[in-house]
Image 1 (cartoon, rainbow, N blue to C red):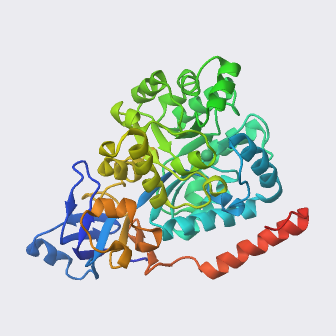
Image 2 (cartoon, helix red, strand yellow):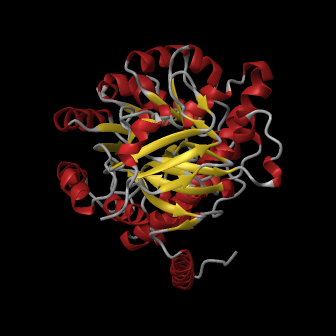
Length: 445
Ligand SMILES: [Zn+2]
């Protein structure tokens, strides 16, 4: 039985990410069986937990674990594979490589690598989407990540070779697959890739099945102007309208990217409580455009944050995403419009909403699961501290994350993974890549 009960005391900065954006100084939190049961208890209340291990929070910031609300973890295998291209060029290059290398075994290993990298950087939950979701999930769960994935849907057989009916069968069996693999709880998800790869009839079928099984939906929406143009030519609607018309939006839905939403799209998404996963790093690199986040916030659209896959964003660093999101707002709309608390909530509380878990994770509040990270504040580049939020956005690096807990279980201790041998994982990945290169005589670079 893993120890998932402990006390963190004398916390220099407890960033709760609650509705009031409370930041507590010299704080104490008590975690019992993976649940936060007390924040700043009195001495007499604390005495009932006197047998629990105590961890010092001195010169630490404790925050909720970050939620990466749009990614493709196994694509760690293709880090740096498609440089100097826009989304169209990217897809052509990457889809060819994926067909060669992303078999089930490599999806499992790539999922594990992506999960390990995520945890070391303070991301405790990821909303993933990839082929071979069973194997990908098994790999990510082995590292200790709260890993949200589900069956992926394309009209045509993609690199996994599945026919439509086989995808539907996998979706029906998905709850058993999740319980067989185990790991931290995640809701049921279905993942139709996009409105340009899935027909009206197929999207409607996924929506109907989701209504029956209680699944949520994750898909790409309006990543580029070109996507909007293609969907308009195919269906005479915007991607958001297509989601509305097919019933997708009747389920809790997260839109990956959503760079180019019209005011009507935003209104429609808000009316259905959809969440968008803003991916500024990937969008900038592929020149997909810049989402108007202040407009989305003002419209009460739920905004979460994501990295996208590492073949477009190259790493899974949510601190860079936070920084880029803030800097883009400053550049586009003026520094006075940057609300760091709101943006941090996008990486935590709204991220939890993006994975259908807003009642369970995403903030440090009594009753929530203990998905926590500890940031070491003793580095020279974090000295002195005038404004802790500005520090988190503009100075903290992922390597400042020292300890990470998921469901109260410590998965990173003193910057070291507790469930994965990092060196062995690295060797295995490099061996698989060498095998791929030898098989296809791919240029090494
Ligand atoms: Zn994506």
